[in-house]
Length: 455
Image (cartoon, rainbow, N blue to C red; front, side, top):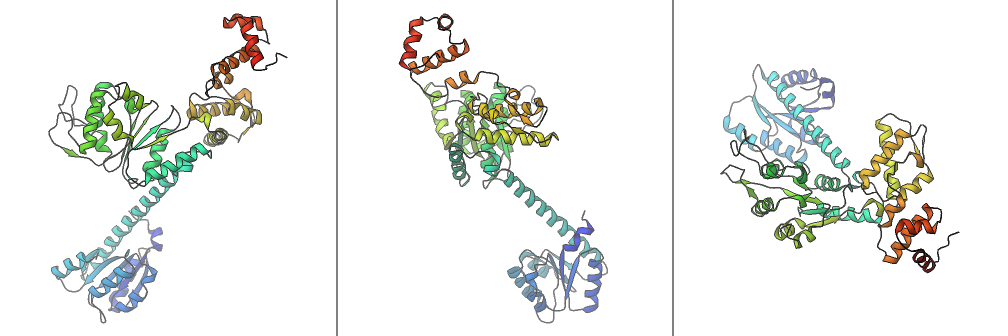
């Protein structure tokens, strides 16, 4: 249903050489809050088409031009205008020809013409409003999934991810996303989908590891009623749900080998048969996959099909762990704090410098997901507007967490371990040697090699 108050910006041209009849139509439309202009001939209407009217009612018989001629000019100069032909003569062939050439509708001059015209324009108006709203929503979604709004960060590592995502949206190539748990693999998949030419179609995400083993095939490919015990109705699988769009298979490494073979066939043939069915169903789906495991190693171990691996590999995108993203940690921490305070109507909070230092040192085994949880809890724990180190729930000693974050020699690792325990036990070499089950001379020798002072 249209809103009369908003119709006033909706522009309608009436092209009618009968002055009295044109005024009757104008009054009808003005009373419905439309903006109306009247033209008594075709040339005057054509000269005003730069105003881009939304609707044009066109008398088929004009003194200077035919309805066909005016319609042709309208399509050249104002192709978005909807044209309604109004004629005093009933001619099915003429009406059909005009509709084929782009006219929206064709109505006869009769006692009920005004009501018919009003209803037609109301339908056009509502349809245009719906299209505008859909366009606005699509633009809003695309803006929301803008890479730099979706994934926060300015580091060199994340810039490389953005450059790969840009390449991914230019074609329909498969994309395999790698990274530790909590690095944002699904966000990358959504960013690629909503910036691609498939953005108006569905994005369907499936966490393979969360589906019971016996139901994976039904979940992906669907089943017919009676296909197995408990199949009381037809089920449309994820491939069909994602038709024309993108299917995101998360934790693809957990897929059973038998289902891997069936998945390979569906991808190769671009068609499937539901469980218990006989009909072949064509599919048009882009495949994006993600895993935190090393698929190439799994291929060598015989745990993942090599042919499927190369089918899915496409453009590989590896997400860096949070600990390797430098100052992105602070940028993300501020973002999570601001979002949490806004959502919970809390006063803004500042992360203190010593808290930032602690955040930079931490190892983040849970990556971005863990940082988000840490910052949200910090907002709750503080009684003021400052987030201090005591508000940060770092459950494991950051020195231990950082120990394995970089590749070192065995001597270097041993030195780090000894240094950690010496600091923990107030430089008591005897106690540290006992705790580690080594001799004191071993500690002194390693410390001497590294020129470490106990003072």
